[in-house]
Image 1 (spheres, rainbow, N blue to C red):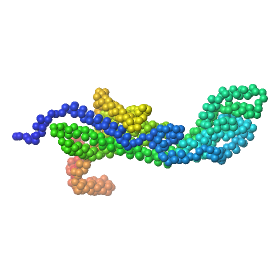
Image 2 (cartoon, helix red, strand yellow; image 1 turned 60 degrees about the horizontal axis):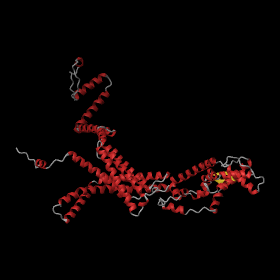
Image 3 (tube, rainbow, N blue to C red; image 1 turned 135 degrees about the vertical axis):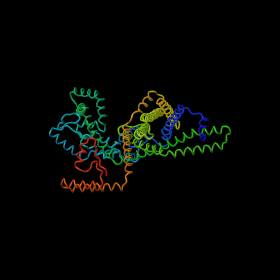
Length: 567
């Protein structure tokens, strides 16, 4: 009898079977190529088009606005232009403003209390630690000067009244007039430096005046002033400044970082960065898929037209290739959505982290990109570890995560190289200065990615670890096995339930209920015996003995007897 093979055997005989090792390597190469291409497209292509990083992040912080106030020209201005307008409208510190600071009710009350203490001989100079004499002239000093507070960009950003801050109890200290007037609008550190720098000159002058027999009034005043300055204890003065600044900074930070303004700016920045990153990742996935498809199909088209080239056929073929590529993208819409979701989450997290960093220090422009890439890799790695969408063995999951981490590390290295090249004066040329560092960064990223991925694929140590890990079961695997067993048991039980005849089952339940009621109504042994006998007869229960007491005794004495009841 002839067996119809429908040409399958002939096809197998006529086609050369592809070597399995070569096929595996080719597939692996394609996967790695896809990873690298996507990394380059998203990190150096889409980033350049969609995301504009700022020195200091996308949210104004107290630290950053103060850096701008000091003249750091790496900033592109305030992140929120309303904050910049508020700062520019701050009034210049002059006599009129100074009067407001020194006529505050708390300032006046503190001076009144000092007068009483001075008369009692209990007033202590905060900067020398000595008691102030009743005839000594004394001033109430703003430890942090009123001018510094009024002009502080951080205070203006927090929208706190400068007079209120300057006249806090911790910022008001009494000292001799000579010290206060010499300090003036200087900070404590500036005043301390001045005292140290002039110490030798001051001491020489004091010694000179003390050896002079007859001093003029002016010389006596000079000597008193110099001695008061020499008596200043710099450690005590700096301690007072430390206490005052701690209270000052706490008040500003608490006010601003809990304000609706800061929260809104942070949420807006993180949402915007999340949308940009989501779009970046989704477009990167789409363009990578299109590129891989086009790269595979174009050589085939060229080979097909090699003998007789036709321009029209060539362009028609290209159109078909692109149509096929985008059709594949449509079929893989879930992957695009997943890329967008991962990008959205990593963008939000990276923006929040960048803002948090800039509360304490200023992040450089490319630091934002590095943070984004790190969070993008973390989110993608967690997605593989927790959900394992491709149902990979545990060892291959670890390897897939390692591939993501290596690629992210390559991007970080490329970004650092790009940043370093951007600092070279000779390359700060319009257009070239922007394009060349990014190009070199992309090349470094590509080479680094290829090297690391080659190591992961060809290292015997890595392969041994993957093989060993593939034999392990994670806690999730054990849970999955448990739920599979539960599911199997439920299926069996459901099958048994499906075989039950409901009418027969209901009749049996009714019979059992009737037996139970009859037995409950029996009050004596005789009634119980009569009831049992009637139940046996009514339901035609087949007893394994003759129904008499004697028969029951003989049945029980027989070791081979088996007691069964049948309805």
